[in-house]
Length: 173
Image 1: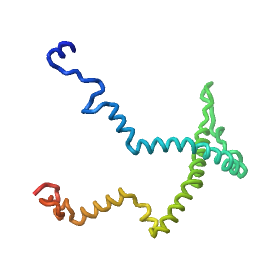
Image 2 (image 1 turned 60 degrees about the vertical axis):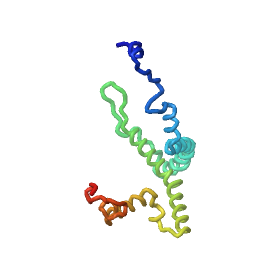
Image 3 (image 1 turned 135 degrees about the vertical axis):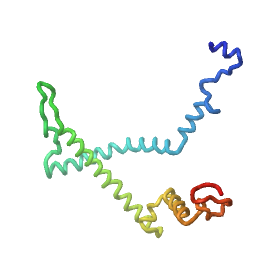
C-alpha cells in the first residue's frame, strides 16, 4: 500500500512536528526553560570566565613557589622509553598532568571553597544555627520527615488520618 492510497482510504497524515499533543518546538522550549538547564548554562559560562583566574594563580603563584622549593614541577621525562624504532613513550606526562590537576584543585579549594565554607559558618552562627542545621537541604529535611512518619506508624502503616488506611504491606483494607 502506498502513502497516497492510505490517505485516500481515510488515513490522516501526521505533521512531522506533532507528537503527543504538542510540537517539538514546544517540548524543546519546555526543556530549555527548566531551571537546572539554565543553572548549568550559567555555571559553564562562569567556569569559563573563572578558568583564567585559576590558571594565573597556579602558573604565577603556586608553580613558582613549588619551583623554588623543589625545582620545576615537570615529570615528563620520568619513565620514558622507545618501542623498537617507534616514537618516544612518555608516561611521565600523565604524572605531570595529575600533579597539575592537584595544584589546580588545591588552588580552587584554598581560594574559593574554604573561604566560602567559613563565611557560611559565620552567617549560620549569626542566625543561631549550628553547622549541621545549616547544611541540611530541604530535600534531606523532607526525606527525614517521611522516614520518621513511616517509622512511627504513619500513613503507610495504617496509623494516618488519610482514611481507609493502608496495611503495612501497602494494600488497601
